[in-house]
Length: 130
Image (cartoon, rainbow, N blue to C red; front, side):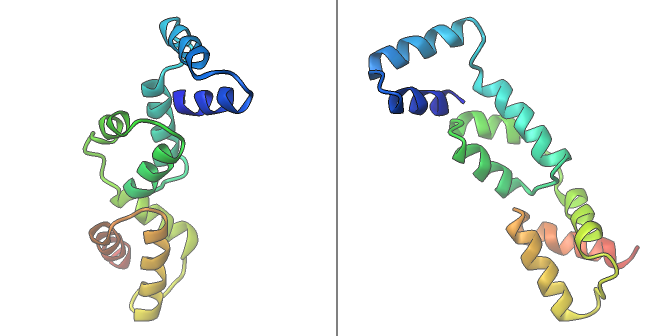
């Protein structure tokens, strides 16, 4: 991301003005594009790692991608329920979903992966009836 490159150049001892000028030039020639990077990362985080919306947002912001760019990339109406169901099948296969302790463990695990309460509840319900 632009911010990561800027921070790295500053740590290397370059001045802020020189860093800004270099990054402006890189953006002009298409070598630095936070929107494209964000779109690729969202695709990987959602479809390969199968993370929830909140964790994807956190990781993108941690990498220095601007909030507006993150919001645009995530504002596509993607439903996390399928990813949550896949995570249940992957990590908790064979678990007794009628057991409250098992459901609580699954809910906590899914929450750590960035899924909200409604998505977790929906995924457990879907998986319980399949």
